[in-house]
Amino acid sequence: MAFSLPLPDARRIRSFFTKLPLATRVLLALLTAFWVAHAFRPGLEQWGALIPQEININTLYRLNTYPLLHKNVFHFLLNAIALVPLLERFEAENGTIVTLLLFTGPFGLLPGGLYTLLERYIFRSNSAAIGASVWVFLLLCVEAIKTYRQNPALNISGYAIPTWTTPLFVIFVIHFLIPHTSLLGHLCGAVVGYLWGLGIIKFLAPSEKILRWVEGKLNLLGRLPHYVSVDQKTYGRYGVLPSTGANNSGVGPGRGTLGAANGIAIGPVGSTQRLGP
Image 1 (cartoon, helix red, strand yellow):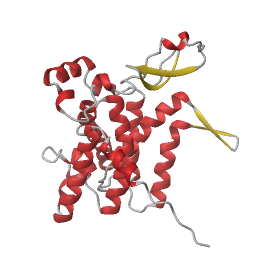
Image 2 (spheres, helix red, strand yellow):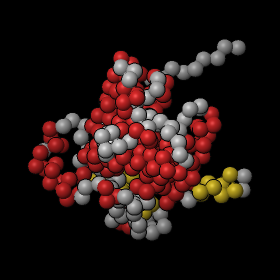
Image 3 (cartoon, one colour):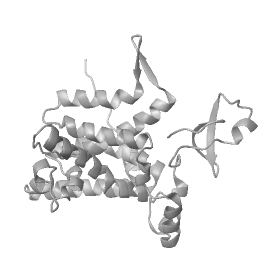
Image 4 (cartoon, one colour):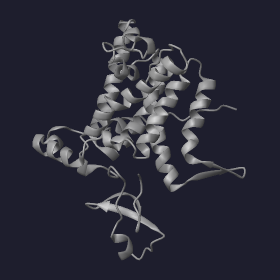
């Protein structure tokens, strides 16, 4: 008996990539460019990897370059495939400027700095770390916190497992199944993701007032294709505000409806509370 796997629809794949927002495109292009450069310059990995004992005032750039480098094409493709959908969702919720600022700054520096401190002063080791998987688990933890607020636990065989712990389970499974993965690096990314999801480090993002002024002054929405502005965000930085149309439609306080902006459905909202952080 012959078995055949359905081939992926090329039109849907093409449609997915043509709809990617700007910051996601830029970061994916950076990952690809560094992979191509690494293929021609093998020493690039040594130059940009996060090597704890090599971090000093002259090599602080390593705290931002290590997520852009990958060991081989399998490592690159695996991370890129996992990262793009998560990054697209993050940009839709936070805007293009915020996404670019965070992923070229604090979201590399914070987990990288934490990793360096733990390796140098706690574990007394010098294990190098590279790869965008630190961003993957950071974003998974952001999503896990949002899921936890809506659905605090998963019931499996009578055991209630907190939904915020699911990325940690994935981290340990990958560590045991895939050799040479950095358990500590992934956990450092997870810590930063949890801090962002809980709102503890939301101050790292510029205020919406400043962002609106910059966008209006430079007319970014009109000049840049696929740009996500502050006012176009799908859910808003701190969650969807209640929809006044909920009660008008006869939906009571305990039930949800679809919120809308300019006639476009933007997600499920309750009539008395907002979703998200």
